[in-house]
Amino acid sequence: MFKDHIAADIKKAFIDVTEHGAEASINGATISVVQDNDRLEHKLMRDTAGLLRGDILFYISETEFAKIPKVTTPPRMGEAVIYNGKPATMTSVVSNVGVYEIVLEFAGDW
Image 1 (cartoon, rainbow, N blue to C red):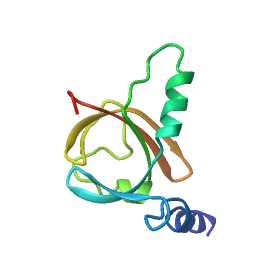
Image 2: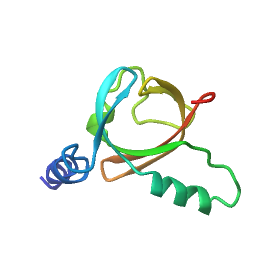
Image 3: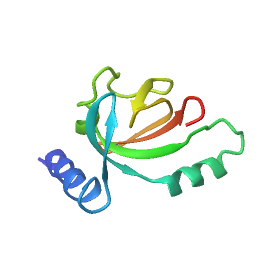
Image 4: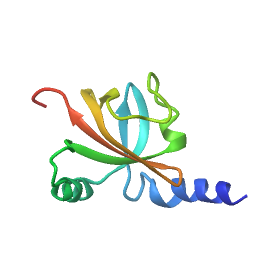
């Protein structure tokens, strides 16, 4: 099935921790993500209304996100998580073909 091939490609090619991904701890679960601060900077510059706030942008597959305890699936803006030991809020969530693009804003002075 086509969806199965896409899901396999996400894990093998896009969110591959041996190539360009990384492991992160989200709410205590070790999850594979791809951090993209260049994309975050681009999004912040294009946000002429000044509505987007964020400290980190990462991509995570739907299957990896489902492993995170104490979160709503699918993720939603305003939801709080603990990312690598730091409290954060999701300020942007975009879903695209089995991958979430999530922007987090850390609470306080991290």
